[in-house]
Length: 579
Image (cartoon, rainbow, N blue to C red; front, side, top):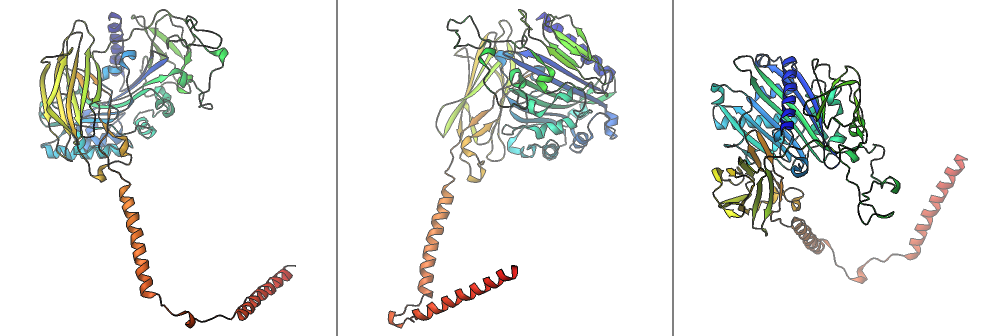
């Protein structure tokens, strides 16, 4: 723990120095994970004074986003794009303590200044529609049914005066069904001063980012003020975190299809009793011992440093033991006192490359233990009712954990509050300290549930509740209705630490959408038969056989023969003219 505290102090000192010396700061922190994985955390930070912001002098702050915030009277903004699931048991605590992580899909919350709730709702609608166009996302679908007003969760992270704070309205919305893709990464990069052309942002590539096992893009806009000073600033922080598979990332682009490794190149665990020339158990090679380089992981070397971050000290850091061999080009290395963090000072206008050769190490960088382990799943069966079970475990042997558990459920998932139960270590005990519940209204708003829970040391709490499934109108089902409906992850807040559970897939009673087409086809067939029969009866003229006109067969033959002869003569004339 002392080593981890020293590491945090060291990184805080670097960030403080960078903020004091420049209005733009960027940093990349690499951390190997188990097994054969690499966590890459990109952090970009820009500052502008509040007076300059009000005067439309944005400097490093992106003008496109600044004008949206001004038009919607938004004082603080937090936007998240996330995919995948964080494996806390193998990867440890979340990066940035989960504060810059969102639930699966898109998550947005903001503090909007308004006099009334109706005015705040109007500005929230303006904000979501504008951000939808800016980031090429479906944020315009965050309507009243997907919007909540948290009471116990989400405290402001910026500075707000007393006069402003009294008029702020917190609104929160999620889109768990949203698929994050390159269309969201491109506008994200355009907000940066160097726009992915130089510095650490040049390593961000859609092929690598969206091939990751877990990835998150975040954008935070907060007002900050120094203590005892009226010089307030507006700060924008952009963060991209991804967990890359080293073996998959090293695959060349011209050979994207994985092929079997030749038998002579297999690395087998020879300690297994069944190991032989035709039987191999893969050897577990740690990411701290495996060979890799920046160009192999990200596809190319880092294109120097961003010239706008002039006084940047150490833009690239890696968390590995100091005994690990690292070869670099275009940089000077600095090692901290913790024994695990190594940072590099880049040479301007020179590409940076970092190579880690294969090495057998007995020492590994420690993983920080999370404050809480959280799991959530559906229980029950049937198409009418169901239940949700959340398993919350406190791994600390000495300290209790006080946190807020928040659920944002859609209106068609009707929660029965009287079925809410919390059992600690299998026994029913009073662990719920406080609760806020806002029931759903059909097609107007969803269910909001916030529960404050205290878990003793080394204990597990199982939180369960029942719900009823509603039947939707056939126009409210998506095209892939049989897939199910995505339920937003639960948000767990422990002070300044945030944890998101996994999203859930809810199956609803689904009608047979082929029936309307079957009815249309059957009805059309019957109408055609009826219309044809009636039309024939009205139009057709019935006569006797002896009254019918008889054709002269000989005359008909002469007519056909004459037509054939005329056609042959015309054809012969055209052929003669061409010759």
